Image (cartoon, rainbow, N blue to C red; front, side, top):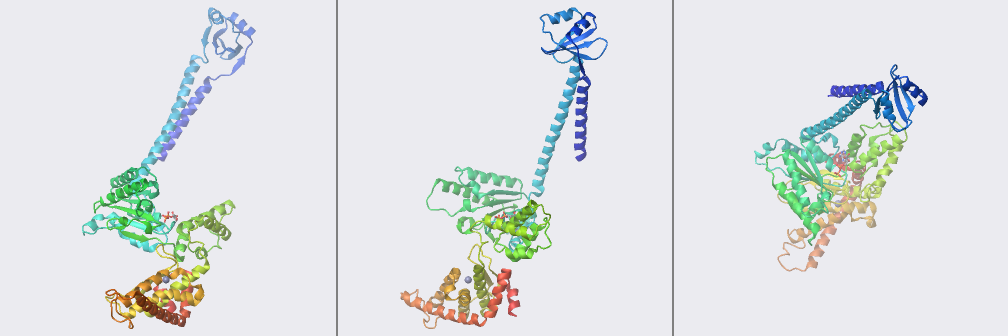
Length: 572
Ligand code: ADP
Ligand code: ZN
């Protein structure tokens, strides 16, 4: 391939050289001759040929020497006949026949040379397209799991999807219905698109992407037909990943009133749902959609057979940020003074995209300063560029005090779980906000039991209240926040069932108040009393264990996400 290219270039150059030298060969030196001398030469019959090119000059060749002379044109009527009568060859126009033929050859050769070049160019282009197509078929998405840092849980959750794309028969033979659709949800810039590409890359299949926002403001029917075209294209590749970014734009919960744009959205959405239910189970086509707003999605999209696997892609915690920063620092020379750990610490609530942006901006600033390695001051400068460019709704400007509040709140839940429900496994405590809830969250897996005892229910209520209690212990009665909203709602429901349904309240006794018409205020009073009691007891317990509370909160502020083992290491 490369040799052929060189050969073609060489041939073209040779042709052009031949052409030009041919041209130069006939292009002779001219000497001036006066009109008088010219007449003398005519009279001596020593002139062989006269060329009349324009009104100014005659080109004159003598019989005995090969030099061409330039003679002023007398512009006389009958001049040509006069010359012809003297047996002189007369040509009109600019070249002699020999010169003309030489020039024709020269020009021709140059043209052929140019043609070679052009053809070479276009055939090269063709090659590129073919190559690209080949790449499409063999390895469309070159993104691999190794390009996605962090997001380990999400990676785990898409592994079998990749396996399914590769060997759908393995699943269909067992009657397993793999999800046709996977919904990735989470804040912008957290790597949802990247993850979808990595699925295609790992499965080694083509990646077809559209964005829901492309479909807004289209004429009715256009969106639907584009969806069908997209799926047809994907089906032609047999196996593929279809990616729909910003699916909320077409899959928003239907707003009551029908309007033209709603009609269009419905048609697009219906086309999508129809196409998705149109695959056979053993086809290796998977649709991956992404959204920042799972709460606004039409529930029709989330039903079985549609986007029934929903995976949260959250903001990276400290360790994930370290991994993402390292990945994007790989090809960038860092000054020895730079520690990735420190940058990771300073970038709480940054998304993956912001971290990538940070490293890139730092590299640009370094290059602008004509320096060879990225140093701390470049990172600091880039930091402000990234923060300033970030959207308001980003959490990157969450204050330290808010982090501290969240840390104590979550530490309260975690510690109380440890103390009251030691059989529960705390899988994750984090101060990184999730898209589904506010602030941070703690996740604990209760021991699998058929029944819940009275003690368990009260313990659960205390665990729920522990967030608010911890806030009160640290920040005072006036310092508590709205962060406990959800906890209070859950605790209230639990206590209501405790009193009203389960017949567990000693004072209230065994009686389902929903069966009779008992005064509401009595129930409310009873529930409030119980909650108050639970709150007081929780406060007592947490105050007694304040050292642990502090340690867990500190660890949370440092690491942002901690596990059961981390808490055990403090507690031991
Ligand atoms: P989303 O689709 O969630 O809005 P993208 O996938 O478009 O986010 O991410 C934008 C860019 O941010 C990626 O191309 C990548 O450079 C960087 N990025 C985001 N998350 C990660 C991650 N987990 N690992 C590595 N790079 C990431
Ligand atoms: Zn809470």
